[in-house]
Amino acid sequence: MDANERRALGAARAERFPLGAAVRLADLAVDPYPILADLRTSEPVSWVPETGMWFVTRRDDVLDVLRDPERFTTDAPSTIRDMFGAHMMTTEGPTQIRYKRKCLPPFHVSRLAADSVPRLRAEAERLVEAMVATDVRRGELGAAVARPLALHSVMSVLGLPLGEMARVNEWYAAFASALANFRGDPAIRAAGKSAAEAFAHALDPILQALEREPDGTLLADLVCDHADPLTREEIYSNALIILFGGIETTESMIANAVWALLSHPQQFERVRASDGALDLAIEETLRWDAAVQSATRHATRDVELRGVAISEGEAVQCMLGAANRDPLHFTDPDRFDVARKNAADHLAFAVGRHFCLGASLARLETRAVLDALHARCPGFRLDPERFSPPYGYEFRKPEVLWVLWGEV
Image 1 (cartoon, rainbow, N blue to C red):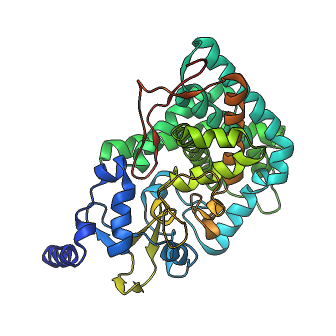
Image 2 (cartoon, helix red, strand yellow; image 1 turned 135 degrees about the vertical axis):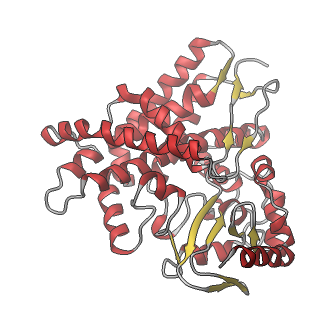
């Protein structure tokens, strides 16, 4: 297709999908839900020129796409593949299944309960105590608790030395910028690639040490697997995506859960007054404002979705945040309701073969933080003088999260 044909196609699509043509990432970052609701109602499959992708916004359609790797694949050129290479999120079929099976054992609920829960609770309590010791009434929860807990947790599961936390945090920041680089800034891409290369270089001596003295962590299991071993490059790539996902998803989930609950103090009181209510409330926070707002797939051939023709190779963004507020599945979907019976039907961790590996771990971390705050910070609440709601188009969380505690 030459330049004139591309312009003609773009003009035709803008005329057919006027709501999609009007979508701006800056507006989605501030408050995506009214925009997504309009698309879901009037253009459920819509072309969005600013992203160069199709947006899919109805829950049933999102499920159809994510559950159909024959027509919609992750195995295609993409930003996440550019950053981290071929791994469990950018492959399909036997290769993807092999990668995921090898990385899954530390994330099983039973193993998490035995290995991670005591450590998570202790670390969450330590971080909250440190925040309280710094200031008797106010703290920024993201930097003081959510980010360091996410780093500590995923690094412990992987088997990375905790003394490298500062360096890993720097790499993570470069990864996050690169993966949100939708306008293709070459300097941002280069910084992300450089961070990925630095990680791989630093991982070599760690893997060598774990091969000599395995410690039961994921990297030790992978490097000591001599029956069906992954190559070093495969270990690097899969470790990178686990590292990034374990930090980004969990930090954002913790911050979004605290924001959602503290933004609805009467509902939060209901949660605190009832044993066992917190887990359901956490599911509602995932539904109401998901940390990851979309899941991208690529058409493997010319396909039709809800009467819309999508060409082979075109990218489809399954808008998870829109699916989680679909009124055909969730009653009064824009209302935050900690007693919602079907809250766990959300798609915050996607669905199908690429369902988030660390979903159970992220839930445990969020629970550990909320329990520690409740125990150590009576009366904790949002700081009204430092209002910072969740923000972001692809990855969504409060940029800072200031909380108060003690007497009002």
